[in-house]
Image (tube, rainbow, N blue to C red; front, side, top):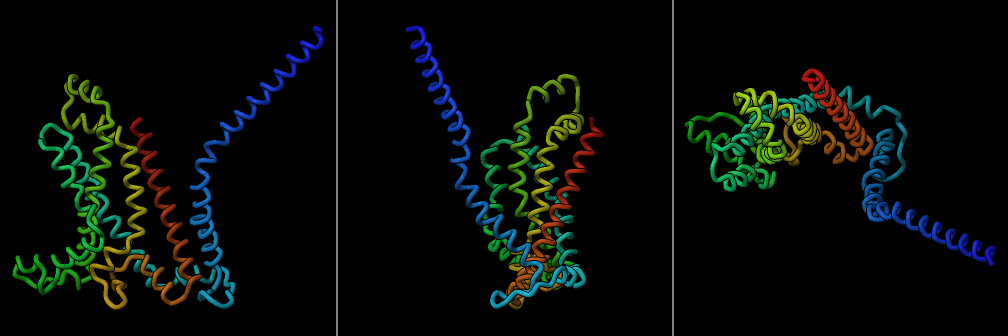
Length: 311
């Protein structure tokens, strides 16, 4: 009888253990089951096309017929093409010329709105963010009417005929102004969220210890905002290398594309697509990808070194 009871207890324990294992496996697989639609979509719509474009960048392909393997010829052709370097220089200029004014202005606005000096905060927040809500094309058309040579608002007020959108040197700065105007609202919200996350007790303690507003900003606010600044600079660099609509709507000519003297690098990709040079276009995309990765890595290194110096 004792032997039968022991066997029955052993069988029950085995059943319970097996049930627990099934439950554990179910708990472990449940998260992956829920995110599987995203993973499938990501593999199908992103990773798959990315791998295909990488392979295509080594071929000459017109979209039909047989693809001809060229090796690195597409990359050599692009890197020795003077238009590529002109467009890359334009893109880097747009990025470097607007990033510091944009970040400084957005951060100062966030500090000001968060401070006790500003009342009606609920009014100023949507007003500052409003330019980001406006469509890119509409924003570019507004700047086109403001800086037009003959009928532009600015030239009418100045009583002059300044070729803002005809002179490439002036056009570049108009594009920079457009980028700052459109982006300040977005980064204002990001910086305001970062400032709100700072523990007010730390700031109050510094104030009690006699720290001035500048000392509080330098030794407390800015160090605690480092990760937010890193995110802002990295994301702005990525979006700057993807610049396309603003310039082409503002000064687009035949075919809707801006002149080479002010065109961003994405124009070269589109030009190759229009010319049915799909391999060349894919090569431009991957060169741009490498540039973005390199710029992102440099920014991470710079912020890491600055953090080590502070520590």
